[in-house]
Image 1 (cartoon, rainbow, N blue to C red):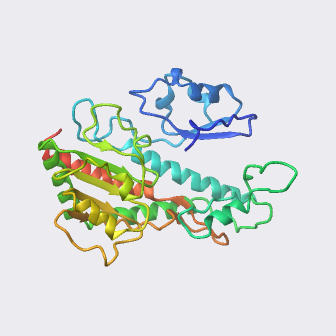
Image 2: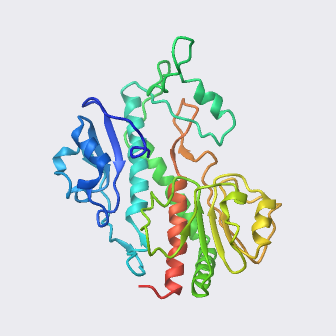
Image 3: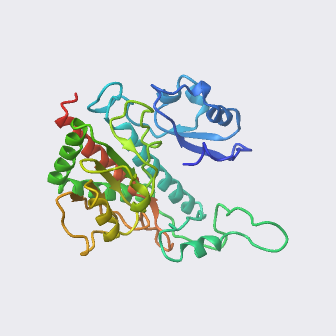
Length: 336
């Protein structure tokens, strides 16, 4: 996350760039300026994916490692040039990417170092805590946050523990979805009915699962995606109306009044929040609630002796739910 937008330039062979790459069917690594800059640097390059994903732009020995993963054509359904509609590659990139990141943190603890982990700004006290790690004085502008703590001892995490706990959490999320198959089927039916009627399908995900990460094609995609916004008053376009469907995979607590504002416009609303459904959110014929019980603040793996959890889970939860719903829609649209 952030390598493309960042102006960070690796300076030595001890620097590491850890990143995923786009769908190789629609991407030429030889023309990707950021990748070419990284390849010309001295940094060690780790790719969340397969050697084949970058084969057109460089030989595999230039890269320090690959997490592996499925081919871009592996998945379910398709429409027009969008194939597969529910790919496996993007979900695997998220799961493999975060698993490897967790194991990197664990390896640091075994070497006697603890990386500074940011606390989610969705949690109270996070801004003050995070700011406390920025060196401040009246001699210079604030320095960026250092990479490691200087005064913390964390008991070493055994190899595989961080990734294993994360995968256990993802399996629990899958079980939670499997217990809501009727709701998934209903959501897919709503999307198919809207598509057949020429209505809009508006999608927003607020939790490390964005169109760019999901590698959504630039054209021909059967659903609209909006900007990642938790506030329903800003996330729902003003011109959505009766018969349209909105899918909002949220991150913030539920405001029943804002939900009512969406439903009062005649929109069929598919909704979820990690904070759970409050008693004030009443049943409605156009409301479909999903229970995706990932933890507020997102991270799901505890590090004994450290105050902040590691490895976000919203990306896996949202991606599983989203592709399950899209697959149900495709089945009803008779897309192969």
